[in-house]
Structure formats: C-alpha cells, structure tokens
Image 1 (cartoon, rainbow, N blue to C red):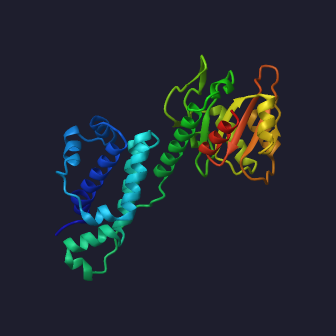
Image 2 (tube, helix red, strand yellow):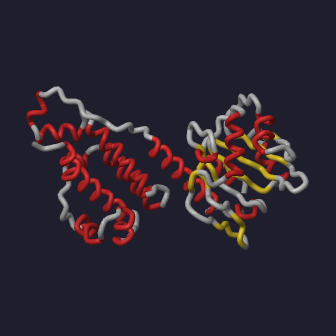
Image 3 (cartoon, rainbow, N blue to C red):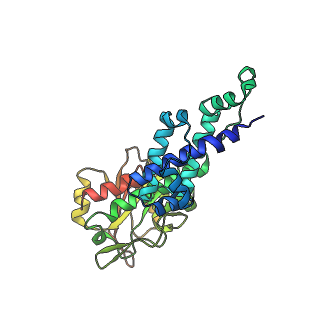
Length: 299
C-alpha cells in the first residue's frame, strides 16, 4: 500500500527542489544563497548540482512544473517571493496535480488497484487567503523596487514620508492593506526603506486607499508623493486628477471627492495643504506595481 503523499515526498519534491536549485544557480546565486533560499543544506545543493538526486522525467517535462520553477525561481532570486510564498505556490500545484492529474496518475502506477477504483482525492482550495496575502506582499515589493531604482524619487518623498501600498481584493480595514512599515524617507538624496512589507502598518496611505475604494474607485495600489504643481500637471495630462479637502479627515474628504466614481483606474488625488497639514499627491492604481510605474514615468 502506497499513499499519494509518498509520491509527493519521494518523487515530486526531490525533482522540484533539484530543478529550483539548478534554476537559482543559473540566475547567478551562490551555493550558499541557494541553500538559504530553499531552506536546505549546502551539501544538498551540491548533490542537486552534481546530479546525485534522481529526477522523475514526467515531472521534469510537465509544463506547469516548468512554469512554477521559472516563476518561483525568479521571485526567490529577486526577493519578490518569500520562502513562505514559494511554499504556498508549490503546495497549490501539488494539490492540483493530486486531483486526477499527474500525481494521481503516478500514484495509480504505484498502486495499480486504484486505476479501476472510483476514488476522489480531497484537494485544498488553490485560492486560499494565505496565497492572496503573499501575492499582495510580492506586488508591494516589486512596486518598492521600481521606485528604489528610479532616479529622483527620493526628491518626491514628502516630509511625512512616502509609502507603497496594496490592499487585498475585499479589503475593509487597514489590516487588509500591505505597505512599508515606518514609511520611506529621504536620506541625503537616497530612499531609506525601514523594512519588508507588512499588513496593517500604514494607517495614513491605507486610510486614503480604503476611502477611494469605498467611493467606488477600482483601485488596490497606492503611492503618495510630495505635492508639486508641475508634477501634478504632468500626471493630469494622462490621468484624471481630483482634489480633496485637506481640512477634513482624510477618509471623509476622499470619499466625498470621489463619491460615485465611475471612471477607471488609475486616478490621481491630491490636497494642497492646510494649517499643520502638508500638501500631498496620491497615485492610485490597480495594484502597487502599476502605481509605482506611473510615478517612475514622470520623474
């Protein structure tokens, strides 16, 4: 008697780990960096590199496995994908391949009696909440890197700090919005990043983003910038711009300004300041990456 989990552990995982190790090495990572990225020992990486771990040919040749290895390998190499996110992506593919697919077929080969049996495998939900959260965090990381690598972005950081944010699809509170903890600040012309993206760490930008969504704007990503009339005019040539009241609470003011919004994303909203309130521009878009790319275009 052989369980499908044994097929996963003894055939699928060694094959995928070997393929990922090879992919990461080809992307220029050292043996030590590959070991860190995959959470395995350097000796294991060495065995993979020298072909000492057998690969199952049907798993290697599967287009979905190849696409997963390429996508996860790229994400691990750039830092856009965490080890948790990589684990989730691999688990999702495993569950899909277990449901009357490749892994089920390999299981039937190992247990011929199953071929003639009416067997249904329990499959985990591929659209689980953890996977969606990791997708959002990865998007914020990509958006952040877009801005970090953009010459001149630091000059657009307001005194209160900038941020890159993205909400979950059905976000209701700031805990459903991922952003950079502590905000981005300008340090002698360079952008200082306090830490890795987290959920629930940006009350300011998250509040504005949630208010825009509540008003009907189809947005999930946001970047806030120092107010600059020339920049606003340039943005306004390609995107709708809407002013909101700086003297009213942010959430209320943004909802009032965008109430019943029927336009598409992206949209640029701004306020020109008040007593004790710094003027700021917000670029709101479909996700954090799109918002960051828009900002970069106008630097």
